[in-house]
Length: 467
Image (cartoon, rainbow, N blue to C red):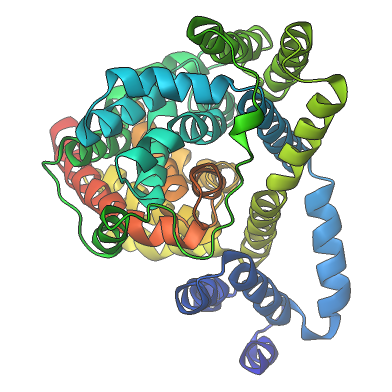
């Protein structure tokens, strides 16, 4: 840390930080790999960034940063959504509906391959939001993947690979609504035409398509296990699908009230249907959807006398408790993003690549540069508030295909969300599946990089074809 304080003395006020802006992000990655503890490594990067900005005001800077993040509307939305979703899934589990759904699937799915393909298919069906995907699919498939000795890390990979990569490919999703508005704000599309441009860009969101290809190849057994994933699968085959050090969040299922299989299935599917329908009704707002679904589930289960009102309230509160650590990691990630913005990380990376830009290479280099930024910051949405005002005018001045440019940007966002160990999607997928974010990230990164290489090659090819 003394090194960062020393670097601060070498910086001239008013001048950009340049290469120094990369150092906190590099420290986070190094500490994370060594300690395998995401929250601690992010905090180390935050302190390093504050020392680099102003070593004399680290404590007050940390306080101001914490307050700004906590008061941010996006953070408040994430905290409430994660808590509500944790509570809803906890109610579904304690009401026995998740168990009923798993037992019904178990009667029809008889192979390990079928289990993995079903997980991927469910992930695609739950396309409305990556948070919903990460938590709901993992909760409903855990018992089945354990039965067929599939490691929790592989379950997290299957779930995460159908979260953000799928959400960007569907115009009826939280991602589409958010980015369509950003495109209009930054002049990429006329007012009211942001969604039309987004839909035009879907064929060019190559990372989403590449990630889907990779995950289905893995599920089919065509693309094998390697690296950390191979070790976790060997452990699972030996009879231990759950990694060491993971506290099982289950409870005694022997006391669950027995219901007819079809009733148990309806008790699972109806809350999910209400969640999706309410989210769509409220303009793709998952918070309001989760609120409506939670109230609906409480009434449904209380009416059937599956759980008492006190048990339902306890289930909601316990669901919030389970989500506290993931929420803390996501909030810390936003603090890193704030520091990187102050250090000028995004403009520095873009400016560094500008000399190598040509019309043909613009989409591929936009993907590469923004993927690095999102990976380093964990903010798959916030980064683009800074980068779009730079990238969009660049594409317009070069007369580059706007759908292709938007496709490259969304591909970068999806890769960062998919690969970064402290992104919200990664953290929630690992939490829902029953492993740590670092265990999930280290097993997933080789497959994410395969998708990134495929995406980069496709964008280079498309750049030359459409230039």
